[in-house]
Length: 95
Image (cartoon, rainbow, N blue to C red; front, side, top):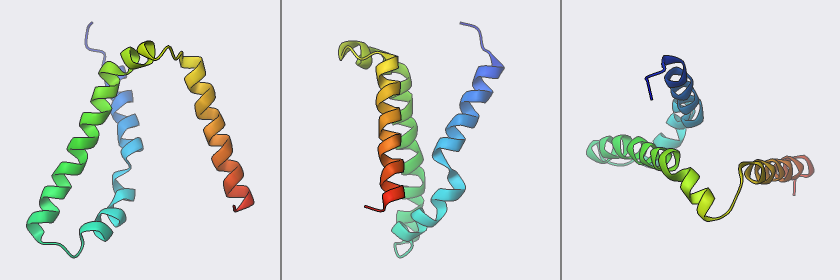
């Protein structure tokens, strides 16, 4: 499989949007703001590495997991749509 810069760029932009680095700064500071600088530095490296590992694992083995569980992509898309609908209805009703 040859290197395709378009796919690489699209994937990189998608990962950056999903991880939302500027939006995570307040959350990170609220969790480690009162800790030692050494702990903050370790957490600042550990969190993105764990998320990269999880995303990479699902990118490589996700299709195998879905095949093992006999779940098709359309079923997964339908379930995701229903979850989004339930969250939207919950936000609208305030329950």
